[in-house]
Image 1: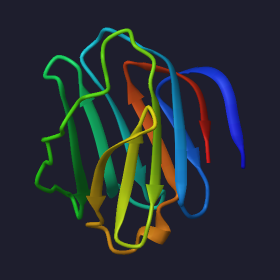
Image 2: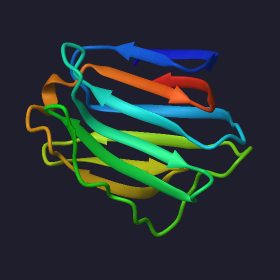
Image 3: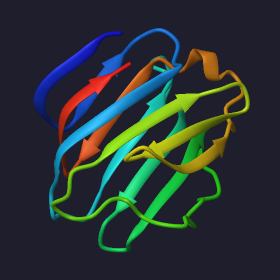
Length: 137
């Protein structure tokens, strides 16, 4: 399992064929408003899964950008694991029907596939106010 172990500052773009799972470990979430994680198809602008923790709103927004349009946002969560200045570990698994996302070892949310050809996801993109210790897949 490849592992990139370095103190990265965003934007970060990792390409690999097919997605089954990623593990993101932060050394620090900065005290700025937000960052985002996108699972994309490198050949297009489509985003199969957009995860956008908004620290100032205390929300984690989930959505997809397909055929030039954003879908309906999913906003509700039982808890928000992202806090300014705090470490976090995020694990994202891609299954046949949905993404399963875990934060700090606990289930965070499921996100049903809106992009049916999820096997074509080949790019992980991270932008914004976060510093990562490593990304593993």
